[in-house]
Length: 196
Image (cartoon, rainbow, N blue to C red; front, side, top):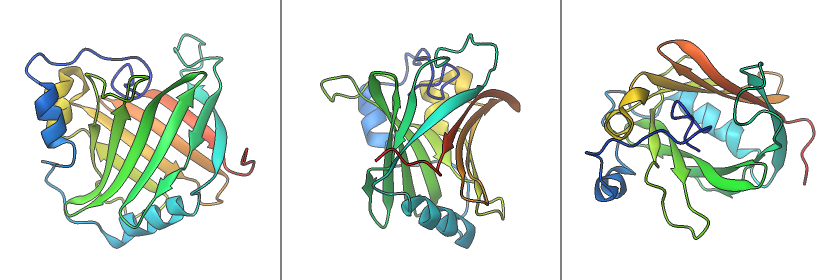
């Protein structure tokens, strides 16, 4: 799920200073300076958890030039593992099932991480990047700037910001990647047509 820009598209190069051991140690930590989970973040988490047990198809809507690695491939999100603290959403791109979005209610705030695995289940070299949400006062949109672990793992992704949007009408889930405040990738999923 490494977005070519460290999102979920192409695998970026890992920093040589970020070891697998450091990845494991830092997976459940965040060094972002944000406040604890807010009422808005909890409301978003609650809304997302209502999708648990369902799967949805999506399309890459940006870039629209057909050059993105996801262009023309079937995108599917599976809201599978849900607890009071963690929601895991495997994100499949065609036959590639290596990516999972992990939303966790941490002491520091709501966290988004990208868990990348090989077919045998072992962690990819580039995995568990993401960040802690900044409060937007809008329970439909969460913004996750790249944390310090991400910046060390993937230096080029230090300015990444992932936006996850549950449309107010409940019809669309959007996964958005920005870098340097420029849109790099967006996939929209139709929540009105669950596929299971």
